Image (tube, rainbow, N blue to C red):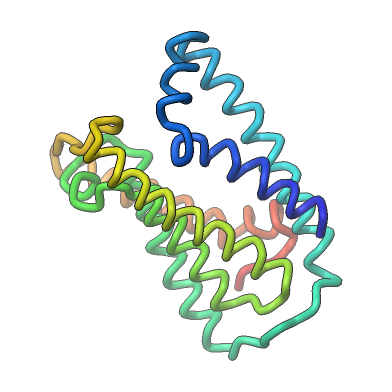
Length: 193
């Protein structure tokens, strides 16, 4: 469980710099250059991600089960994950009409993913992981709203053609199918369906 918690701290910690120290982040980007900042950010993110995946894989089999979700909840999770992947696809694609309407599709995707997995998993390791991400995404969204009001973040995404929405939805659907088919079992060690 310690490696899982360390991974969450490292991964969400680097992703929280924008929340707790936006001016410091902007100063480092200016001082070091945007590419250097992004490189360091990416390396720390990758280390945190590897630690949390590894830690979750080790902690989950022996984690105490605090509640056992009903079987039908797995179907709700599968449906929510379809939307989580579509939101992710909208984030990845260029702006159409949906990205400006959603404002922060990546955060919506993370919140949907975390909630979906909380509905399907009642073990302590899962609760720690998914509640951490859900709480972080909520706090990040609140911080972004404050930063937009303070002029530290861009408040508006310029809409593009609807064809970009279609591309985003297709990306999300393809990712969803790949995860259900093979990637979830390969990366997490659990067949989702």
